[in-house]
Image 1: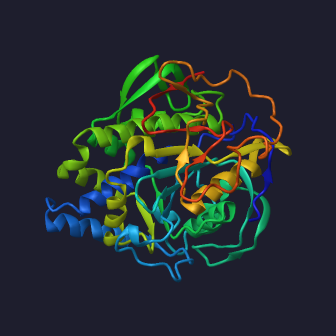
Image 2 (image 1 turned 30 degrees about the vertical axis):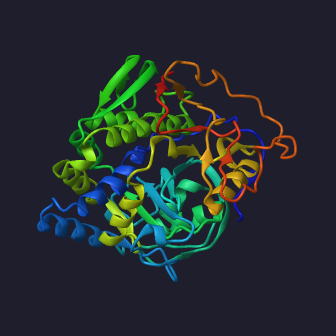
Length: 419
């Protein structure tokens, strides 16, 4: 792996480089779980299923790494679980998939890896900060076919503009060492419609949020967010935490956890009319990799997600540290990333009992507020001194992530912190 790495603790106040639309995370489980549940429902008329299948096939892109990848019949048959990359961009789908279109302006401002364990008991959703500086692999522009050579010290969210979805997949594969045969790009037009269909999501706010850019204004307390309000909440950066992209990721996890709780605690996934509405809204704004652009594949992934317990759905930020060359950027934290990469590769469960709630999120009881200022750099973790800090998780046993990680499970009720 050739990504830029450091073992220093994270202390950047970064991401104030434009207010790009990074609210795609909400569609991740919706587009994969709810969408595919629709097409597997016997209650849906054949014409509706055919319509969804046609929509999937119309938005397909080849990643270039599909050789030898088994077409899904049952996710349980895939050794080592399943990795699905969900990419969010404010660029239209046709601008990054149609030959001749200019992709240079496209940005993968949200890059999320969903790992489903082979036993279907654990789901890990990893958010990669857009400002992470990496060594970009060689990519081929999907528009004009130009081969763009590998480059050092490039920002992760430029991968989509360099070579579309395949380039983002290659970049994340290089960072993690994992193979990612399934991927999708999501546009924003259907987000508001989808949140309206499910009746909104109940979100907790511990301190008022006021963002002049997204025009979001929320008092402290509970809010049911749908439509444009949900979009504004997921987009806001200036209104939460320290105003950085890292703070926005934490705030998005507050929303995503509440969304999963709603989906799994209500009759949403058992209502075919609601599911079809969600599916239609998502599919008209998605592009799929060849291996994912199959109704059978989607059904298999949906089956793998059915029955997962809330405390087994983990939302994590990929471990990064402050970039010593630029205070507005971050680099991969080598020590922590090795722990996470090894656990995902070994398909071991992640124990988040020590993981911190940070940046722009706090526990519902108010005991987990983010620090008011950036923490001072910590010394590198000594694996010998900390049994939890190991890059070789016990076979079959859980990997206890150290408190240098940030994230939460879907079972944990958290609140977004305004600034």
